[in-house]
Image 1 (cartoon, protein in one colour):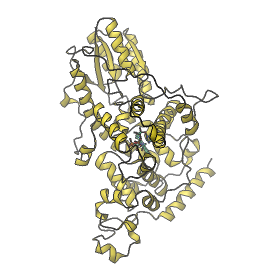
Image 2: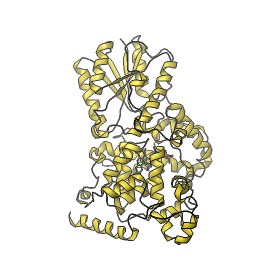
Image 3: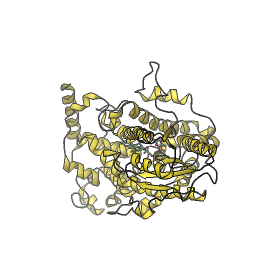
Image 4: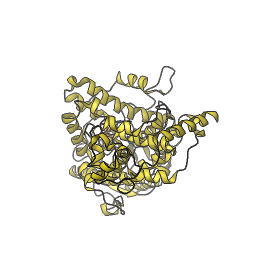
Length: 481
Ligand code: FAD
């Protein structure tokens, strides 16, 4: 009977300790590894995959299946509740052991426990190993043995002990089983969107799977690592790696990223490399936080924010989702998101700040929209990012830091290239006015073919008034505690 390997958010073959353990166990008993993936909409509850993630998963699974086929095996894809589907697979194949990588979302941890129990009931053992992070949550604790709640000391601790051990090679040819049991045909995965087609920009931008991940990292090291410290904040420049969806799905591990950076001899780019490592550190920090405080997937880390007088502003929320707020940098971000499944980090902060502070819409609404539309939707990073901006996170930006979207635009997109790309109706405006078209004399605006209120919306709120209302709401929250 084969050993089962249950792929989850670890869609790669190299540097995958749980897969190597499965291959070893199989080799020890003269058998092979049967790789499977379960399409499970039920177990994640409210965190079932968004449409952009489903698109990604479809292509990533295709790529994984191809790699497994090239090694003589076959990826079995089934649909159903993971615990039941795995139990079923074990009984069909007679497998006595199931291996998988650990995943840290609260629902995933519950699922692991459920799968373990279900399998145990039929005398099958479940073996879980880490593989998604640089450090297992629980291994990085402060001097009192508790979770860090502040990024800097957390990262200082991690940074001083970054792993240097050699990475495991993928299992060899002949390690995988084929033709043992049947799975769904690709056409029945039902992951591709039915209501919309990814835009040409979207298709050009992404290449799900391990080779796409390796290429993204290579391109980043060649073209953008030098200058990353400054350029990472400029949405009009290709200054970041765009590794986030690859990292989320485990197509590349952070240990592989580290090893590649080391091998590329990037010592002379120390400042840029440190900044990049620190961003991987934020990913690590968010995952560890969610592990220790599982309620922060949808509830504020800071309890007093439960009293925040948010407003169920449906109209404002809709304008925000559609990129029609009248603030060019916000609209550019929201349209980039819709058209590519991605948004630049600086603009994520600006858009999230606008929704939660200018419109006082609960951060959870924005997080949900991001969840559905981002190809890199990741529970820890998304909730962490939103809570950071909204001021209710562990090591958050203070609430009273309310981004002025015009000044943010002028500072980080000074030539207006980013706005021109995503808000084409403003493309003809001079850089000086592209972030505040309402300040431009109407005659000049008209000369560029723009009429506010017709071609592009007037701002849906006034920055100054919104800022005051946000500060007042924050005071009300404090008074209520
Ligand atoms: P790079 O700058 O090249 O960074 C390399 C890697 O480090 C990223 O791929 C990512 O894994 C990690 N990283 C970078 N910045 C951050 C950060 N601020 N927090 C945590 N990890 C980071 N990231 C997601 O992966 N999924 C999300 O769902 C997500 N939602 C967000 C929501 C909001 C409101 C905000 C403000 C940020 C969110 N982020 C999220 C974090 C960040 O915006 C993205 O990780 C980043 O933009 C990805 O681009 P990149 O791969 O080019 O980043």
